[in-house]
Length: 310
Image 1 (tube, helix red, strand yellow):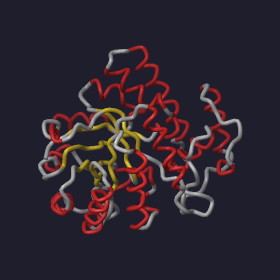
Image 2 (cartoon, helix red, strand yellow):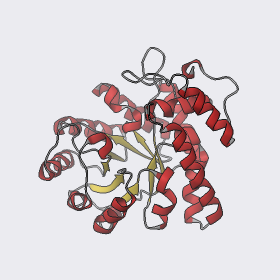
Image 3 (spheres, rainbow, N blue to C red):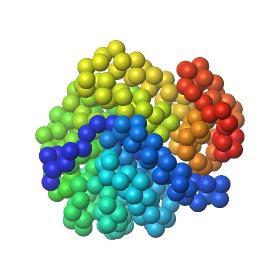
Image 4 (spheres, helix red, strand yellow):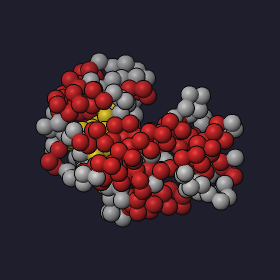
């Protein structure tokens, strides 16, 4: 497989996994968010990426989430299952489950916490690829994994069978562009932080982006991509500026970004739900600052704020 084996493109969303007040997966809320995302015009969804709090779920719960996402999407958008695991055998087991659930592909992190060599990382991807014949999106997010997928290492990963794409979330635009130059002939090099670089990356050759801002922003998160590719410069620039402001409201020192995503959704009446321990709902005064920021930006809020957001 290579980038021509799939038609992955456009604006994608990394889905939150809503939990209820008893810390159980809220399947109805999850399905509603998928339905909303399809309506926004997104072209792809990732179940159990970082935003989906995969680390707080059991293996069986992660497998269930794949099924929920695929069933809710009903083939209308591409669905990938995140299969992050330090143990390659566990990642392979999750990959099998994602394929069985009907996912169109999987997203694979390098091992995290430990510091393997480049050859070890290649072996990890090869183990997953050899286990399951399904398209793979590699995922570079060194702020979370410790391990940095350099452009040179990604060029090697691009030669692993079944790897067809990369989500480049290093927050370094130059690193994304160098990766595109070295590996873009073989894999689709998506940008991660579209709230910062979406317009620029798409203009310079990204097939799209894999963000999480559609969870709380809505249709404008997808419109940024389409305004860019359709040459509507004024609209694209305005949306890029708004995306950055909204990102700055949720990505604040002293508060966890994943709890912030859900708080932002709840403030807007969207199905964010609770985070799962060790994360807790965003408290005051952080919640108030987020609410005030949205109001100043003209972002609509729910008439009645769900209890989870208090």
